[in-house]
Length: 282
Image 1 (tube, rainbow, N blue to C red):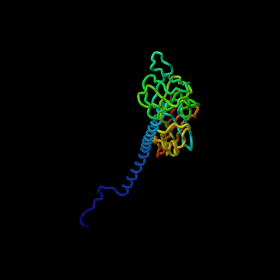
Image 2: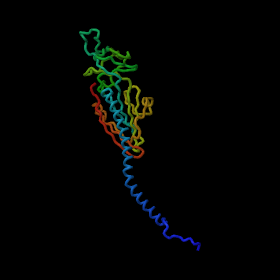
Image 3: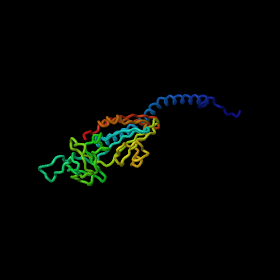
Image 4: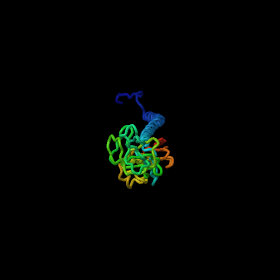
């Protein structure tokens, strides 16, 4: 014996005790994680849904605002190849035209005579208007027959474009379909189309096309003119479903239902609905 005695009561942990402690801590951690995981997951899911909702709401509001600033009864809808097309004609400027001869102001005796085959100008009542180059003037747009700016005789080219116009000269001369009840006219240039191509997985798109000439037949292909050569902007990605309804008859009444469903990469989905009522007084 070396004379050094080993004490049997020295402080420390045995291997078994350490294993037991580690096992208990593991069980406690797993239990706590189970209770924490669900609220944390719900928190991030709510953030994803809020982001999708904010993005979709902005798009719906934009379309609604543009529809309410378009020529009355100019909205039309078409579906082709899984894509829904919503087209309308934005108003550049608007005013009221003189419809009767003035006895008190002879210098302003230039009414729009809708029944005249030779009339080519009219005086603007109230504030002056702006008509950019290439503009046209529309009167009494009902969206049907000859009172249809896409294919009727209620649209004429402005031949004296400029700013602060008090008189509008137009071409060609000819009889108009009728007088606007409020003697309103609208200055227009080009058309706008929203093309929505959804995909159930959330990889669909909503694209805005603008700057193309007004067509008699509604464009229903993004790969051919005029949409293929128009200015295009991606408005919304993550589109899993979308509709513009009802059909043409209800569109003429200016009540358009818009539904938009968005799905992100985490499979979170939100659905938005709006039914804008646009002005229908031609």
